[in-house]
Amino acid sequence: MKLTIGHLFPDLLNLYGDRGNIQCMVQRLKWRGIDSEVKTYSLEDNIDFENLDIILLGGGSDREQMLVCNRLKEIKDKFKSYVEDNGVVIAICGGYQLLGKYYETDDGKIDGLDIVDIYTVQEKGRLINNIFIESDLCEMPIVGFENHGGRTYINKNKPLGKVVFGKGNNGKSGYEGVVYKNVIGTYLHGPLLPKNPQLCDYLLTKALERKYGELFKGLSPLEDKEEKEANKYIVDRYSNKIENFKERIRKLI
Ligand SMILES: NC(=O)CC[C@H](N)C(=O)O
Image 1 (cartoon, protein in one colour):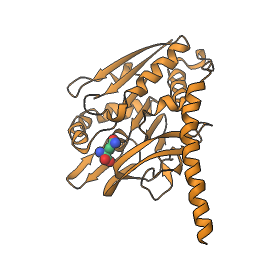
Image 2 (cartoon, rainbow, N blue to C red; image 1 turned 135 degrees about the vertical axis):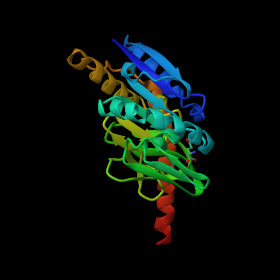
Image 3 (cartoon, protein in one colour; image 1 turned 180 degrees about the horizontal axis):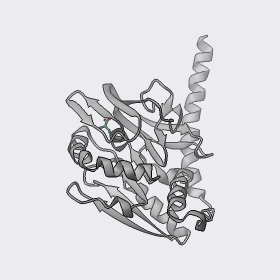
Image 4 (spheres, rainbow, N blue to C red; image 1 turned 30 degrees about the horizontal axis):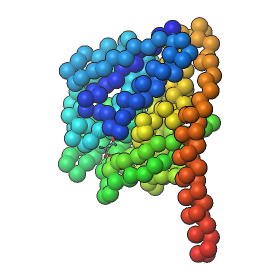
């Protein structure tokens, strides 16, 4: 078995090591004896969606998102068909915002792919924090790092999870990310997947099921000792902060 992973515009969209998500997917496949191929695309390249099993759209500055947005207009229909055909997409921060209808910044409106039912508006101040959330997609909490000026609002689609510590989509709703079909959008950098092995396996499973159907019998389990430790480190560290905070509030009232 083999999966082909497409990394879109890594020269523009690749903040905080988002590319590490690809290395993580490749390694977790390799440990199971599954092959992979990584294809990177620049703005001018033709994207052969029909050959792709997973697409990564990383984060970027507003300026870089603006540059990517014109190219997205040209590939919008093909991208949409890929998603409707259950193609797997993992989109981080700036890439997440671009999945939606638009990202309105102080310098102008950046049109998105309109693949998921979200929109983003730049508001005062940036949401910068370590963050962890709880999601129905995996048992372990999902941990990461967020740094965004845009606030994302979901219309109809489901969020990826509930914020336990951090800000998430807009600092108000208590939710983080979005899930639509096999598309996950999230503000979590890190890179995201190495510390969230269950989420990584969720994406790989979706891609293998789509490609191989009944022939795919599921991913064999891995020990994930270090991955779990790294995840737990963040969860413990920030759970304490929540507890301290709750304690302070308790004393005040
Ligand atoms: N970290 C990012 O990808 C930043 C996304 C976007 N430019 C924002 O500031 O909201």
